[in-house]
Length: 113
Length: 113
Image 1: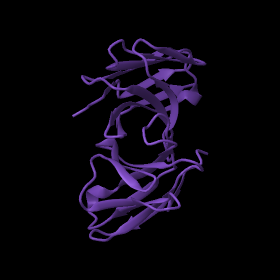
Image 2 (image 1 turned 60 degrees about the vertical axis):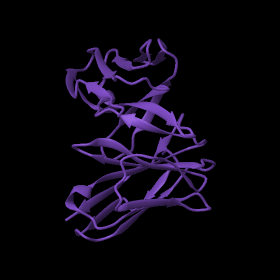
Image 3 (image 1 turned 180 degrees about the vertical axis):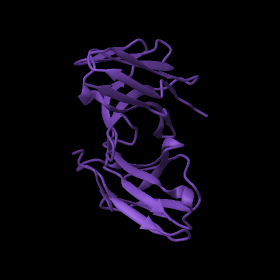
Image 4 (image 1 turned 90 degrees about the vertical axis):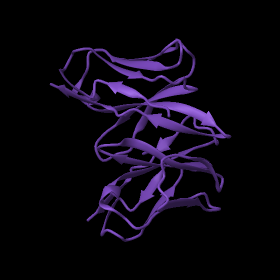
């Protein structure tokens, strides 16, 4: 158990819909990272937040957005969903704003039908 | 664009055999990490190598960072069925007070008893 929690574990929704994935970092960690893992693209970095502020951006689509709240939990919002958005979404956390050691949550499996 | 190429993509061996997984890039990374991921779970950090030429050992696993910090290898001695899983290398690229991890596509290892 990494100490990072993600909900829900599984999510099935239809194309065009909007979903919200939630992540709670390990106690004491200030950075949260979101990743997408699909069979064809592998594990792709989406975005990082540190203490409520966006710190780094990766291959995140404009239809996706994220935020980190004062209690440090984070949400990833995915809208206008397409079949290709089906993937595992992982959240990870680390103590500082520069990754040296990050811990991954168990992931949310999103299926878009 | 930073890219990490892992090889081989798939490896199926018998218990007791040795194996090496390679991770190569044309980019220089601040550090390089190796993760192991089991089905339905998030990646778990095995090791971080920081200095060019660095070698780290974790029981039967030996990790090496290339002198130029562009490549790395993971060597497993006397593989066991419990070593089965997806092995991912990830290069850390730091910028703008943040950073991102660039992941390789992974090596799917199967160790048969």
